[in-house]
Length: 382
Image (cartoon, rainbow, N blue to C red; front, side, top):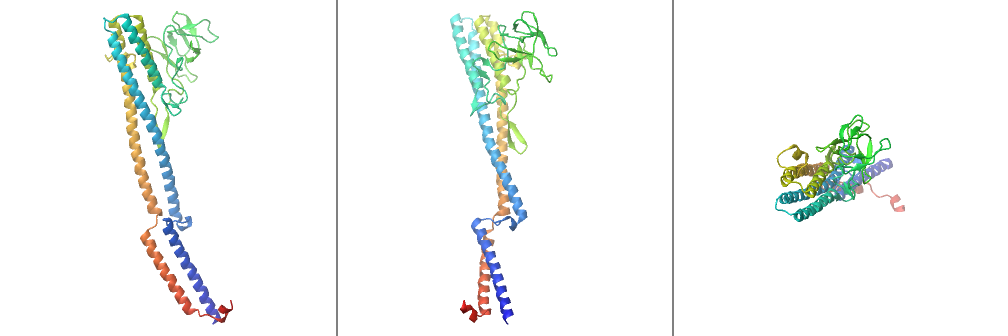
């Protein structure tokens, strides 16, 4: 009889503990809102939950990246718009200067305004987002222009003189003609044979003039025979920002070559106005608009405006793509959040029903146990 009583007691206590555990788990699920209180509850669902959280964390980072992308693109579009407006004003001024009734004083006033516009375009070329120059490629801490002019850019004008390396005697004058990219030999403006690898302009800026160690040309000649930097490491490189897993977008505009061409064209405008050349020549050579090679290369005002419009169109296309990626990220977040909810969130109706059932079973077990296990003298001794 004692063995039977002991067995009944042990079974009752075990069942009551089990019932308490079930009710405790249901209460924890209801209070936390999740049916996974620990990984052991459902290992498969727990692994899925970790994957969902990883995806959402990446989504949040891409969304933050999207804010950076929009900042760059919006600033680029606004800056290029300012350049376009400035060039349109230059076009008006040059057309005005081409009027044969203008006096020398009138031309001087026009020249002064154009010089200020050129300076303003240089300021726009140095536009920054935070600490980053948006038109400087990956050289984001370096402006395109400093006080001495275009950094590492075009060597323009016959008055520009560079100091050659010690292997060459005398000064080299521009334009440089008959350049051999293989040997690095050429003839300067005075017809002297020159051979060099790098030089320094009058402001002390280093200029690349021959092929790189890999054999790629570092410069070319423009239509006037002037040496023009073809590429500058970093300035002509793109700044990619990741928008999605494995998907990046170059957020910078290729300002190095664009502003170089604009500045060269503006220099020619100033030189023409200073020279007092024939009015017809001023209009035909600088205004452009005929679809010539000079227009396409940006050597004319209309050609430069066209280059700016192309750059703005590229920025607009990138903005459209960024908007589509933003929509994709938003859809992904909604989808993954729903999947995570289906995987982890507790079904309140089911959990409450189960809790009520467990409470009923627990109370019934206590009631039955109290009837079956009668008190003995030992209970009162304690």
